[in-house]
Amino acid sequence: MVSRAIFALAAGLVAASGSPALAGWFDSKPAAPAAAPSVDYTPQIQKDIDDQQYLDAGKLLDQALLADGENPKLTLLAGELSLANGHYDLALASFQSIDAKPEQRARALEGEGIALSMLGKSDAALAALKSAVAADDSLWRAWNALGTEYDRRHDWTNAEGAYSHAISIPSSTAIVLNPFSFTR
Image 1 (spheres, helix red, strand yellow):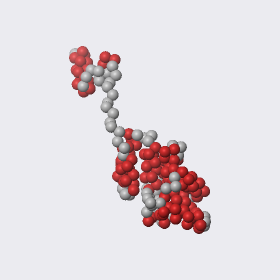
Image 2 (cartoon, helix red, strand yellow):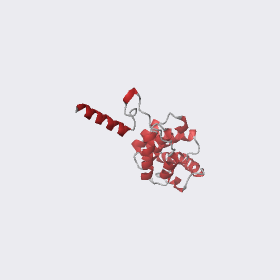
Image 3 (spheres, rainbow, N blue to C red):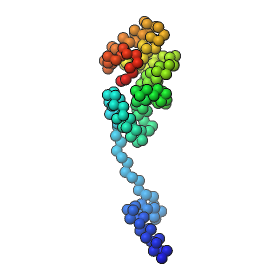
Image 4 (tube, rainbow, N blue to C red):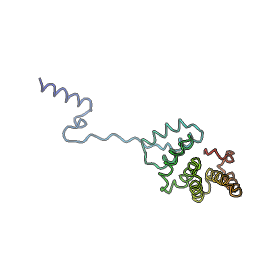
C-alpha cells in the first residue's frame, strides 16, 4: 500500500513537471526557463513623465526595475518621477546613487540640485547645479533652478543670466521662468 502511494506521488510529480529530469530525478538540473527578451522601456517612461502621466510612468517603471534594477537610466527615471511627485528625499537618494556613473552624471546632478533646492538646502543645490551645467550646458532645468537659487540670494545679475540661458535652449519651454516648475 505504501509503495503504491509513493509511486502515485512520483507519477504526479512527473506529470506536473513534464519530465523526470525536470522533477529533479536522475541527478540532473532542471532546465532553465527561457530568458524573456529585454525591452527598453525608458523612452516610454520618459514620455509618460513628460506628459505628466505619473501613474502610467510608475507602473511601467516598476516593471522595468523588476527586470533590471541596476540600470542607471531607470534609477534616473525613478528620481525624476519622485521629483515630479514631490518626494524630494526619495528623488535625492535616487540621483545620488547614480552620481558616479559618467553616462548619467549631468542629469543626475541636475536632479540632485533641484531636489536639494526644493528641500531648502541652497548651498548644496547651488554646487550641484553648477556642476550639472558645467557637465552639460544644455540642461535647461538645471539653468532654471540655478536662476532660482540666485534669486534666493538676491543675485539678480546671475539669476537673469541663468534664466536667459535656460530659455535660449531649444528644448526649453515657456515654464522656464516659473522657478517652481521643474518638469521636463
